[in-house]
Image (cartoon, rainbow, N blue to C red):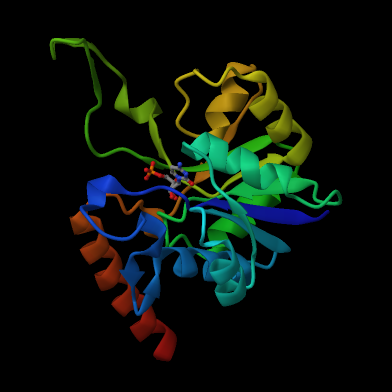
Length: 226
Ligand code: C5P
């Protein structure tokens, strides 16, 4: 089996405030994207990495990170689709991983691939919630409270049989309100397995998340040097 990791990294990241595209923000003397890619490249189960980047960044990113690159699309889904279209024929398992989750450990990628190898068509990491989640209407009035014990906060990398993910991207209408790749499978009625996620796979979205990532990276570096 050949496993490719696809990294959508073409978003502007406006919730982080003004500056570089999110994937190119600095973390630990390098970029969010470089951190995420290095962890994928260290995963025993990952054979190659393809990154969807903003137009103009293809050559520099490919040279600096040792990855294949494609130009991303207008939204995350389009960026993933562009990377899928650039995969070599012999790839049969695909991980999709956000550049915005720079500290997701290599072991998490390996665990996701392991579950795909075991026969699951779609596999996502998830963590139990600490907050209570309420659904509200357009006026902010609560319409439902979902039972917390049955909910999971879903992370990346998400793993799929390549043929299944490509079919899902092709068949689900572009205007479907889907925010992750597993959501495409769900709309087609394909089962998706949730495995235990990792605290370190948190997403960098707002400025405070960058501070959290810097602090965590310092701890990880200290542990590695001991
Ligand atoms: O904005 P958000 O945090 O949901 O972005 C998730 C991931 O999707 C990020 O890694 C971002 O770079 C990527 N993305 C992309 N192309 C877009 C928009 C987002 O690759 N047009």
